[in-house]
Image (cartoon, rainbow, N blue to C red; front, side, top):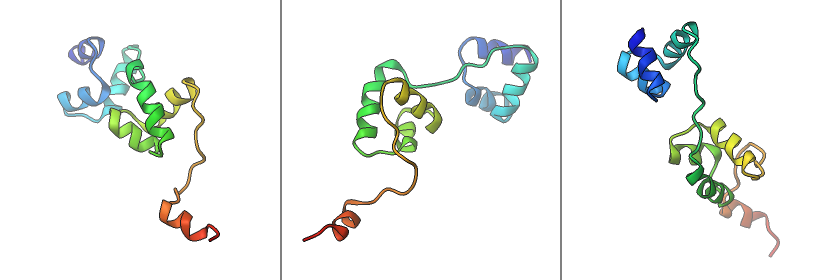
Length: 105
């Protein structure tokens, strides 16, 4: 497990560690916690924050923005809130077609 710790300390993510050592990312995390190695949270790079806010404001979901930048929905939400964006209520989005069906002529 020394190699796992060394890889983590050199910047490898939990997903990368899992793939490299053929274990689940949570198993990798458990080994690191037992060795008292701090686990970094991965978020959006600062250079991508403005674009992520723009994409989200343009109608993409948190999941879609996360997929675009390779981070989780939770990471996107955390970064957008820190950047001053307001998170929409969860639930189904209405498409433009559905909205026009309910609008008055």
